[in-house]
Length: 319
Image 1 (cartoon, rainbow, N blue to C red):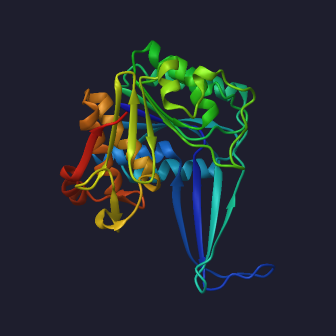
Image 2 (cartoon, rainbow, N blue to C red):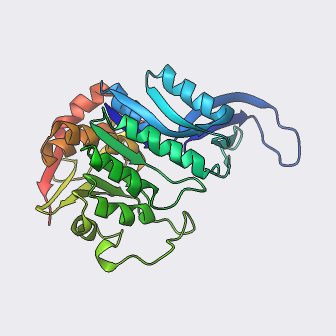
Image 3 (cartoon, rainbow, N blue to C red):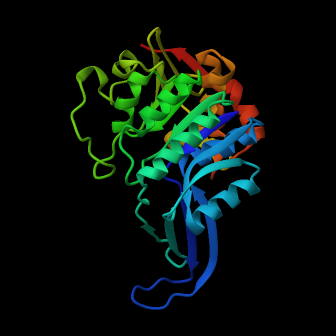
């Protein structure tokens, strides 16, 4: 059983209106709901490929209920730790006449000490039967930067491999807990919480080799045209294209239009997890992950495109 953990999920509400005018009443022509959160996306994709998966983490209020219901519709089992506050919502308003999209993001809910304690207990119970723990995304208000490091420690105590896909401050603290794989999120100016203290040089979160030296089993760096994995024994680089790592992507998995792996990051993460669970070599794991990422569009994976793309993935050693 693969456990994905999303501590800051979101309910995405999309409004479409013929014309949007500020300061006036706008008639909505269409309403759609989507679930947001990296761990939830990873869980859905893993389920598509037949893996037994449980989506865990924090959820609360009416938004949390909708998130749980939408996952159930997709056949994904859930075991959320329930919180008092409402899970955040992201409102997207589309002006159909101009195509402009205006987005409103609610703040993350505040998590109490009691809720954090229940999360730890629930997570440790899941580790008893887990084959991997996938920790994804940002932390809500009230949770310390050490949260992911603590969850990684609990998994290590249960001999469960950990995949961490998170921001800089969580990475540097978690690396010493020896996660199997870290996928850094490169910092975006003006977003995220600044680190409280400057990390020691050997644990600099933007340096893959330093993270490996600090304890991570491997670090995967996702760029627009390839994914590079760094380990203590060397590294690998993978992407599409007969001449080298130059992935292409179009439509729902079509290999005819230009694209990049960053836009399919969740699918790429989901693609790397089975290799860890089943003990694949890095070339095997990367081939599967890149093909899956390129075959994904809008959260859905085109399985026929995946099969066509798999032999086109080029994997080569990197320095």
